[in-house]
Amino acid sequence: MDAQTDEMEEKVYFSAKLKNTLELKGNPVAISIISEPPQGLKRYQRRVTICMLIQSARRGLSFYCSGENIICNGKVHVGIGNSPIWDLEDFLVRREKIVGSKTAARRMLDLAKVQASELGKYIILSPLMKANFHPDVVVFVGTPLQISRILFLDAFETGEINTLHREPLCSGVIATPIATRQIGISFLDMSCRSFGQYRPEEMAIGVPYHRISKIVDNIDCSIAGTAKSSLLLRFLPRIMNSDGSGQSIS
Image (cartoon, rainbow, N blue to C red):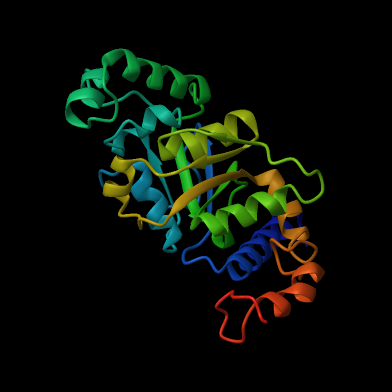
């Protein structure tokens, strides 16, 4: 069995273990930024945004996309091209109403460029279980509880919850983890939620691929995974009524 086959089986196992443990509604999404078109993957042909691409991969599709097909500023945030919008500061202030001034818009854009300066020309996305490439980052979309469990599984051995929060989604959970090798979090900005049709209760986390194996290894050991807390098992019956109301038992 060659190394490529080993890694493919590893990704299938990681995806199944995480999806089942966390009860995710969609697939964990494997993402890479590359300089040349990949072999064996279809090119995404429609005009699209990064947040829409992530949703397509969550639902099971594997593909790559160039900056030419991305109609939003997401291509700048992930470092695969220039914005199609001539006056981006004015766009963010007057049309999108994301920030209140051009100064604030420029500050937001400068930060995005620091995180994602020319990472490549193409973005590849696939459900983790089907990814025939080595991912740079794995993106999870879920509830705050599900995202919190990932954070604590990652911190189980070190006790360190070391994350970076960036907005928008593409900067927070793609560019930031790739550039810094740290976990990135996004609360899904308003434009992202609209284009990608994300649920109100959802947020996202991007985990560098090299950290996934430890997260999976910790599932059986941590209460954030499947381990049971002996403290809760001991005291919960004393503080909860049989109907689960939480009232003290006299």
